[in-house]
Length: 360
Ligand code: SF4
Image: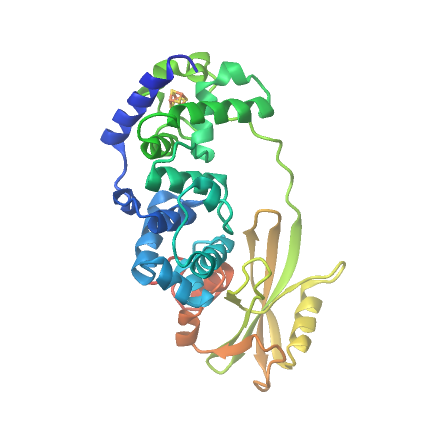
């Protein structure tokens, strides 16, 4: 990165004042609201996060309101957004702040980092925006901007990229308005220095950018080689009893814990989907009058891809499903439960509830 830090900082701030998007959390310095916004915006596009933010803050306007609510209420507000662990940890951290700090939110980034679900980036973002602490918040957008600016110095070393980006970011926030500098870098990455086809002509840092000068914007940021994700087969039971469907709640410690889904059974080594479905039905203490294959779908998670073969099942009697976390649900009940994304897709297919996005 060529050029002095202070002029670059000023150009960033001037650009941000002119070009920043009107997002609902931009108007606040309330640390609770910024925390909610930063948590929602992880792995989520800003416009989508904004819709959830308005809803979440309306339902839980304060830390006290969130801490007093059941986890299932928090999950319901999160439904459709994915990465539910974020909601669980936000709720857990709110309760911890109430119990251990009498409801007083932390100020320093180092204190924020001690809370569940709050990593370096989120801690720095909140501390800089709410309290003006000069600490760099480095997300994927910031890493992209600064790695391109400093391309020559980084070369082809991932470790060097990490060190250079960290040092550059810290130099930029060590001056006036660190919270705005952090936001400006994120905004630049999100709207101008995009992963593909960056709009270098509109960039306030364009004349200092080494990747642009060398025609290497596609090379940076450097990434570790990708590992192939394993594919795991599952059977999914769409069990009817009259106009009701059987749903089960995932245990809190599992991926997507606390959400409801149609009974989903992981196939064992060498076991076909039908055999897994029959085993799942037996485990639920139910007998099928009719069982036939339904639609199949796939779902990607961070560490694996799930293939899901559904089975449409009619039972002879509702029985008393063996699992305490299983229940029969009418259409209205399904609408009210926090469902996994796959369950919502399947229910929407059958006209049982609205598709993926947040309910109004
Ligand atoms: S000049 Fe282009 S590549 Fe460089 S920081 Fe700006 S948008 Fe990104």
